[in-house]
Amino acid sequence: MLPPVFFSRPLWVLETWQWLGLAGVLVGAWLLGRLGEAVTLRVGARATGMTKSGWDDELLAAGQGNIRYVLAGVLAAAGARFLKLPPPAQAAVDLGARSLIIVAVAMFLLRFLTRAARFLEEKVSKSPEGTDVARVRGLRTQLSILRRVVEVAVVLVAASLLLLQFEAVRNVGVSLLASAGIAGLVLGLAAQKSISTLLAGIQLSITQPMRIGDTVIIENEWGWVEEITLTYVVVKVWDLRRLVIPITQFLEKPFQNWSKVSPEILGTAELYVDFRTDVAGVRAELKRILEQESNGLWDGRVQGLQVTDLSERTMKLRALVSAADSGKAFDLRCLVREKLVAFLQAQPHGLPLLRAEASPLPFPEEKSPGPSLLPTRAGNMTRAEPPR
Image (cartoon, rainbow, N blue to C red; front, top):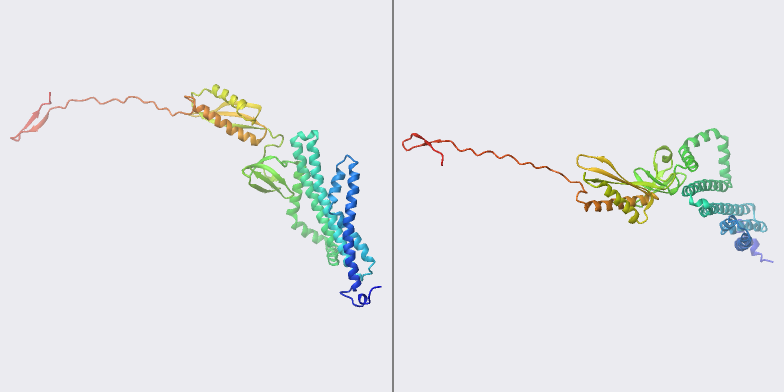
């Protein structure tokens, strides 16, 4: 039997023994929850080891750290019943237990979504279809957007369940339902932009005008699609800057996608040369550069050299090459341009020359001066004879 002091001094509605019992119930629920999680994971690991599917492994891994909270919430709510708590105290314990369970289940679902998306990506990349880069990028894009849509839904449902436990929130919900017409109109107008953005994200995941990893040119910037969310897209620019663009812009405005079908791409290097340049020699030098000095940048598909334009002083040569992706194409263009300039510098008539034609100028004929009148001492004018 407990001393009478435990029953005669109520403290904040509860008696002292009830406070001690509640503390013991909470501690015991936490310890039993951890123990139950350990046993569940141990048994689950043995069970999943007997199967070839990887889904059960991901499910078990997602439950680690969340099972203890679910068990603790259930045990705490059940153990508090034996303490014969007053209704307000029992309601508070039940509220805390339900909230803990809701949060734990939501965290479990969010973690499982992340692990499931990663598991699918790895499974596809290791399959025979993994060699199709476009297919893998499309799957990554769809999984990324679908995962975010489900995550938003899970968070909204969990938040709704948490808030609906309170009487004040339920009363507000009833009032909103009573005036559903006006409330729906107001909320619809207020959320029009947000809803259209979310729908644009879902539409992009279905139509896939671009995917994660695609090379794009947008806002006069060249880069790779690094991340796609429901509201914006992150483009990693070539100088490591990040360009954050609203997702609706990709559906409303044109942009260039260099790897929509395949990452393979053609590149050009243009040179201005003299009219007397040996074009066949430059073409042979281009072939030698690609075959011997390209360092793996050239994929061996396309090579060519053409005279594409003429001016009054030069002619323009365009070297056409191919590469496996846009990054290698840029490096290959720079390499070809550098090597061909060095080759032209060694040629007598490679680089453009400024020509000027000089003609002899006629010199004026020398004329003998005629006789001139010179004054004499007497003031008379006399004619001076030219020197002989």
